[in-house]
Length: 207
Image (cartoon, rainbow, N blue to C red; front, side, top):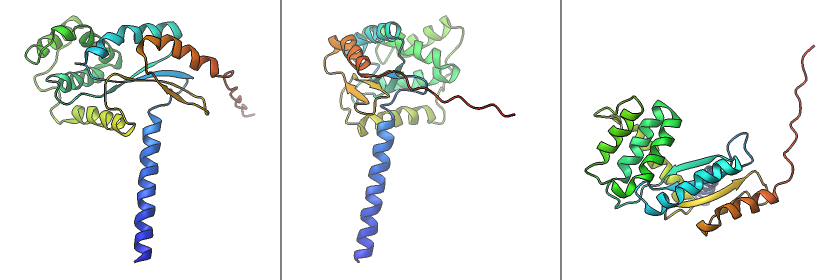
């Protein structure tokens, strides 16, 4: 009996540790970057739409990547479908998917469940492509959206936008932005804590 209980306890610890590692990996800058802005957003969220121009400006000004995660809010009538559409445009090119997200956020106050498809078709036509009638026939794109949302839930995200400034610092690898008006200030504070970039060892050529 004790052996079985110990085995169950060990399994639970292993599962929790694995989940923690997976969650924390979302709060790391991508390869080659020392910092990044990570946002969990809902494309129907007015606050997400409000902060988006500042995030794009920060991305340009500080030359750090902006990493978006899907976090559609339950009860928003067209949010999930917009996120799935964005994932569809990702399959054409990640840049097009990013541009679609910016387009939806910029126009969110004029979008309803009944005209979302019209906005998507207009965007597609402007970019010389088209959205098929069934753009997620297998449900694979919806699964990707839901997987992103689960990452957020694992981190304790419960509202949008939730924004982190992440870095390669071992002491404090991420800071959650509590005041949107202090986005630039927070980025600069995190930058100031980073030491010089680590020197990469040069590979020796074979003789």
